[in-house]
Length: 57
Image (cartoon, rainbow, N blue to C red; front, side, top):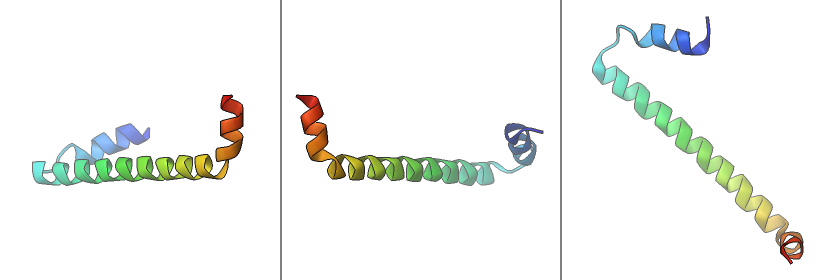
């Protein structure tokens, strides 16, 4: 069984209120991941600022 199939099985008979909670949580996790990725990129850009400027010439 795939993860998607397992998720569908879990949410098949759940109230709309709980589905909203699941969606909110999934969106929170996605947002958190995007923030972490952005933070990592910002850190790398800051760390290698001079090298990036040289490469851009």
